[in-house]
Image (tube, rainbow, N blue to C red; front, side):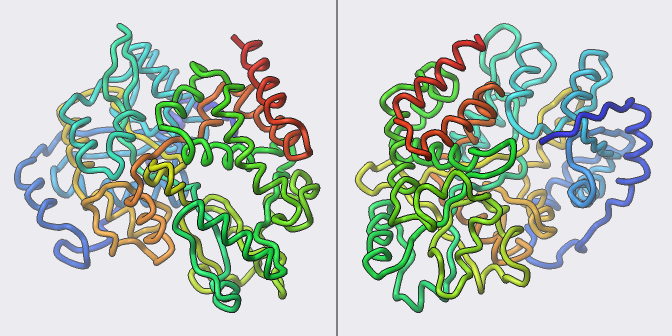
Length: 451
């Protein structure tokens, strides 16, 4: 949920000056596990003293401070004064500023939709084929990130605009290592093994899964993540993309099959704590708590990287709870797809110093400084995972690095009336026993009505 608070550019500038002016070098050159050699070579080649860049985005509070600390290294290397403006109303303000010709040099977009719209209106500057090639070669699942950052320009031709910087992971299964050890279970590495483990848990008298779709007015959204993950594990990425854009209708057999894959877990009374009838009414914040009961109400919970915030107080991730990658089907040979989201950098007001900052983003150190402060994951294959602030984030980073395909949360990219409307409610109906094909047809009808 976003708060729509408008502010003038002058007010935001004052806020930025007071809140984000203390970016500092958190590690001295040569210290720690950071990649200093490439940073020092960049510094030697880029003396741009006297120039400046401005960046705006949605990061505020600690996120903004962490980013400012990273910017301090760019300033130290180049002499360029770099300032950041963070705002809760970024998505409204960036359009206003770009239309008025007063855009910052770069903008941090929370997802690709708005960036693609601004690119189509000629409000972004492309980063070019060389940068796209670099991303393809240096990011895990590189072509996925090139595709996610490529949009049609004002002439309808594709250009590369978006460099992803900070990513989150949704394709995770949470569990209690102690419960697994006590029962003699091993972490599965394929979907076939995951289903076999679920059957084994039932045979042993347990319940494999805790699933809850409740979320107030947003009830149903956890099921959309399940379906998206199942689409990526049963279909080629191009099919997923066609579904997201509605080039392939929502009620296509491929989508119906993915919904039914979710149903194989959520509509199986033996597999779900409380039975299938409890799935739609259990709040998603409460659903993982069964992992920690004695005896456990369930052994596994599929949810994104944020869910530990709702674990019982005192739970230590890495000890009391851990995660593994939600695996794909070995028989389908679709690699290791990862579902998630992320923020991307795009150029809104080109300059030489802006181009230098884009080059700086290629450096492992630009990512490592963020990694070391927490709340940041990167697919940059050259960044040293030893610089992550803890083992949990290191593990999440390794899931990203192991990905062969990355795709954005589909519901976030669909029209709001579908992705945050009929898709949610349709999944609640399906969890309650409705036919998958009929649910999918209803969602498609709602999409048609929006066109």
